[in-house]
Length: 238
Image: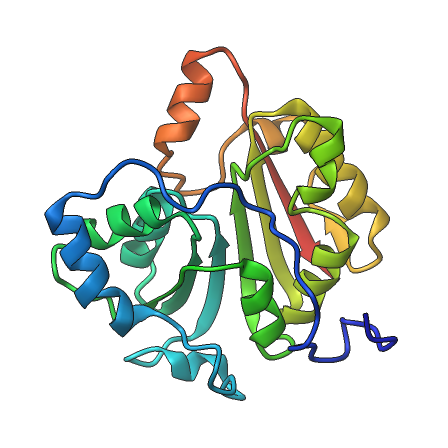
């Protein structure tokens, strides 16, 4: 890894690790296949091209700022935010083909001007983005990798927090949600140990209640049905 600190340098050559599991699940329906073939090439970000100095230029119409959602699953939260905030550009990352297909099918052929997608390793996109280009990063219900020997594959860790710190603007927000207590504690420990982040919490209710305008997700509803209480953490980029 280069000696220069990732908060102040761009690292397209940095090696990455697989923080996700399988890439594809059950067989796609014909409509989903069609959406992947026709819509994804239009919305997908091409990392072989240099990133624009102003990341807002990625979008079809002017936006005021740009947010990133890593691992958007079926896209429930991402699409709700895209529709709620038309003046904000959203980049969604999801390596699981079925999740991308579900989101694209939900668009019903209409391409939001404030949405772009990337269907591979989020760390590559983070290293491609310009410094201080994002106003927010959402990491919602990531794979917890519960076995201790797999903890190194959890997305939250010193290296990826360095990546977040580089691309987030000062005052930018990193939001994390999970129903797995060990991963919540893990994230708190790592973020509070990182000099670029501060936990935005004044009481227990700040992490027990969902984020503002939270639409919920299918995974979250399943977790609640099974008796697991989600936690919602917000960290500020100092």
